Amino acid sequence: MTIEHVLVLLAGIVILLGTARSVLTVLIVPRPASSYVVYPVIVVRAAFRRVSQLARTYPTKDRILAVAEPVALVVLLITWLLMTMAGFTLVNWGVGHESFVTAFSEAGSSVFTLGFAVGHASGSRVIDFIAAGTGLVLVALQIAYLPTLYSAYNRRETLVTLLESRAGAPAWGPEILIRHQLVGSIDNLTGLFADWERWAADVTESHCTYPSLLYLRSPRSLNSWVVSLLAVMDAAALVLAVDPAGAPTEARMCVRMGFTCLRDIAQATHIPFDPDPSPDDPLELPESAFDAAFRQLETIGYPVSRPAAEAWLHFRGWRVNYESLAYALAYRLDAPPAPWSGPRRRFRGESMEPARPADRQPSGAPAGPGQIRRPPAPTPDAPQL
Image 1 (cartoon, one colour):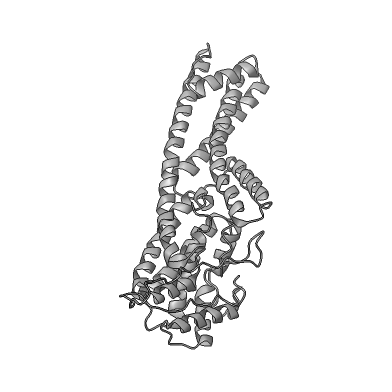
Image 2 (cartoon, helix red, strand yellow):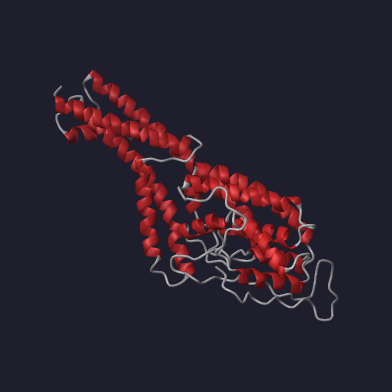
């Protein structure tokens, strides 16, 4: 065996070990993965994002981006197989095969368990057995990976879809309080905040372990997990700011678990953030936008025990913990340009207001339990970044 064969053999072993490390960290180890094999996924995402910039409307942009992550997952699986074949090709040639064509043919036959090419030397046959076992294990792990991924996705989207009737589409924090007040069900906010506290804990675990979930978009173009979480946290922060005496404990717990979720995801995706912001730090959300929402709450009779100026100080103290993280994720994921969710690549300065359903009742019929006849609240008159 020449020095050239030894070097090629070592190169093949390095490729196989690197591929094995990537498969283990991405599919098995319950922690964020970092590997050179993930680079093709980044390229696929960037390519689809570049194409989506040509879209003139957000629904068209969303349809393009909805395909990006499934394609990226397929590319990742193919990359693992190709890297495995490349590694065993180099190993086969390094142990004495006459040509790379023969080594490649034997590696492909073994990895895909086709069996049409088998080495005659004893060492070569051992490599064939290892390659065949590696191929079977790799395919089995990939088959098990997708159901696990989509199970976590379905858990996430169930609560996001349920929120649409409470917060509109795209979701907006003040809209949650407005709709609950209009139908006389603000007591149900306690259960809502408790559900989203558990949801945030589940998303923290699953999305940090499987970052591909971050980029899998909701079935409905105007829904988004990050916008929905931001809306629920804003609603909880508003409850704590405008009526602290009547605010449920679940509101505080929801906000804390929510920004813990965003911070863990930010660490997994290398988004910088301040781990201990001051309550007096400025927000990107203008105070005028908060004042407009506060007036809407007053107009419909939502319980308010603080003046707007004082409530703003407390709301800012809560929102400073999660605003920059939510804005960064919404920007990176090209989430719907919802009110109070920051700018987007193409839709800078624009936002989609959630459409509130009309209060239609039979003429002459008195309002039933849980029905409050009020005119629709005015739309916000301030920038909704």
